[in-house]
Length: 422
Image 1 (cartoon, rainbow, N blue to C red):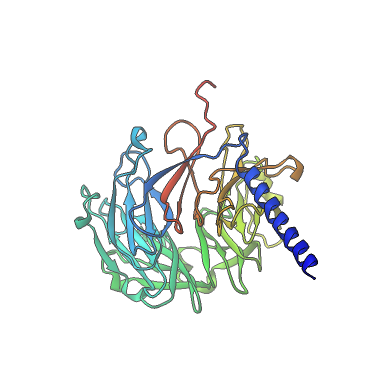
Image 2 (cartoon, rainbow, N blue to C red):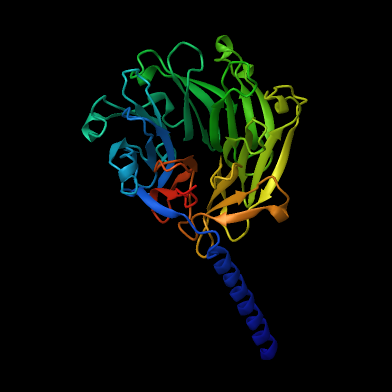
């Protein structure tokens, strides 16, 4: 009996050793070097998302981030290409307990960018941090206000700016998670700072809103809403067709079109021309280890995304190697400067020895011709949204993201592929 027990123990030890060696080889492949990580801000805890805008008018994009465990929202200002490898100048724009998302928008049209924070947890509120022109780096110049009607409605998860009703005043489209949560829009009055007068228009029940994008899906001149619902009976990638400004306040007027990933745990999505046909595909991370590339057939080949229900979306699925964590976000860009798009992906639950961020090359090729390269190695555990952006101005796409478990903070990975000799 002991002999068999020892043999089983030896087998388990050998299997564990072989797994470790496979992870070591995958992570340390010198032909695919990891990208160098640079810290933008790690002043608080639980950095959760990066949203971009040129706040100070210098032509460079700045970053808004909510720090969920720290309970604050901060803005980081691009310091110029010469100093981009060092921590950036930053300011805490206000408290935002349990903040899940923060985005830029000039709500009161005073020329100064404001920041809207979505808060979940016990806070459950939409919070606005009002900016002051010429004093964006002064924390005392920012004024924070809770949108009173939003308090306690549900756990707010994500928001985007959009003039939904065409009145010239930008509104806030937002959604949440949990029981009774919805995707909808806040009708912002002309006197935007009077938050008691913000009016909520629910459009569609959601169980867990992950992604939200404003895009003209059917090329009719009106912006529609593209989103992912992570959990529940309505989970998947879908879009809501804008019914026109006269009907925008009527929930029943927004027609929904499912795209793909229905009844699966869809995470963050991105858009990009993966196939090279001049039409963006939708690329979405799906837990545990998948990436779906969603391409519309028929008229999409002519550059039109049709809203005809007969139009079928084609799903192509990539499998993330299990040496990585579980799927979280995607980004599409020509990262290796070969003239073809690649798909980067971030993960969570990437506890060592698993890797955190990778890159699919030739994503539409047969599996035998497709490779997965490490970007981060075993750097971090839970990364979030990925933003492809040339932060250092050297001509190639870097990756901006954040990490909230090991508190790496707001970070970017420098693309090693640029060769100034070519």
